[in-house]
Image (cartoon, rainbow, N blue to C red; front, side, top):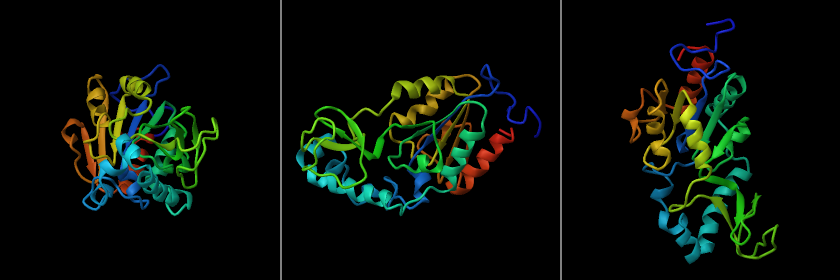
Length: 254
């Protein structure tokens, strides 16, 4: 499709500017092909370390050194640029840049690969590995080196209160009010590389389904826990599926 209406899909409710808003949820599967381990695969992170030891507030209170070591190792890989965005990240950044309407990426990932690919409209609902937060003053600051109990908060100066700016099990994800607001008005929802068994992200497709006319699509290596809730599903590598799906959107064929 070419011409002035090339970007206008048929059969979906439009916003006042004529282009349906898009919300995209991404999970560990989109970054796996960049070399980052997923959490729930047979050979994933939780197969080698217990959640209870490194990813809960109780674990941090009990053994902060162990928690810091776990996140320092992962942060080091990102800082070294050993891990790079792949073509799936780049395709989503292209969609945001070229789609005339609103595009929001909500990611469960704590890496910075979406940003490095060029994404601007992005919510890290589970936090960011390259930031730390002070437990004393709540200040959040970028942090690209190892973190330990001897580090002082750059804002309040208190030593030993910094923690990774990530959402641990038992904590509330970030910006949920904004996310639900965007889900309420989106007309295309795409879930990419997520297992579908971590809430509240796993419930997003149900939120969207309540909106008449909204289209839902799952792009994944294999069916997620909520696969039957999607109107459309494609399975395979994110680096293959995502660029092709973005091309289809930008050519008005969805």
